[in-house]
Image 1 (cartoon, rainbow, N blue to C red):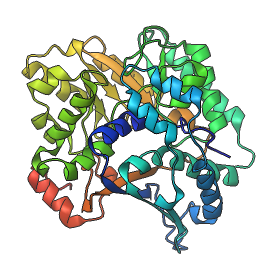
Image 2: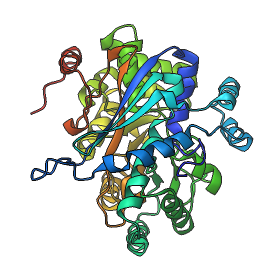
Image 3: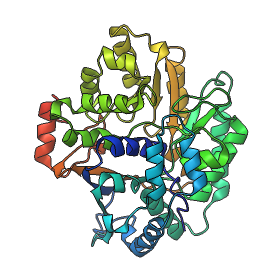
Length: 411
């Protein structure tokens, strides 16, 4: 059994779920799975990774996931955070994932279709564990004797790079649950990082006060290993607001205002790439610059993004040294060090490293995602600064969204 606890997910799933409970309890949504790896072999016409071979095993693991419920100790851990409310804990005490809301189908190409459809409140916790299941099932079938020695050697190199002279203030966080090689390897990586780098002690989305491991997005390992859980919002939250807000053009500001209404200053990191950086900056006015603690980068050139954010703060008469920029898009340790050296002293910094920490054993990782594609019967979309990350099933809606937010067509 791959997933043994409903806490084995990212913190932002719980922070978003609480908003859904309080503000959008009736919302109906649909999510779709996508593998971003180059998929079809031109010679055979088949998917290179052949995930369809493992559909039965994936279904069995999801069935086991749907039998889990929150334990008292897990609920107590969640309740210890100041931003989690008691009625949400009461709801989680009754919560179970329901298998009727998810389907997994093998496609003739060798790829798989995963569709999640149902109430947002009852489907939001599927994404991260299902992605972790797909990854672990795939790798335990294709790498039956994994080269853990190679993985440990690569991890040692990363730790050595982070412990170089002049980098003692550089702090990283683990964001690697969804694409990890395995649950056991994920835990080993975190234990080694904590032992070698030291850990941060600050709650919420802070960068930590001691050591270079600021924390982890994984709530179970945060509880198990005494690490700081990190995270605020994800793309699905801003996407859903396209259907839930008063009008489409105001959906981004509506999402930020609804978030602030829920958390009243806690969890103040805004996600910047659901409509692209230019559209984000148009909406992220002086009010939001002062209200939110910072912003997170997840697509496009991170150096350009950081410079634009600093200029935007200056333009809005906000000292960027009081704000946090979080970088989390496909980071490696060398890229993290480059970003740190460019922006240190100019703002507060945080770095979330995912796949490169938890799935770097010498094998090609799966670039799997599960994204929301519909909310309350209408299409929703993400238009990032990396076009390959865009995901929507309705081209007409994409064109309309670009028009409404004045976003140019890529290419």
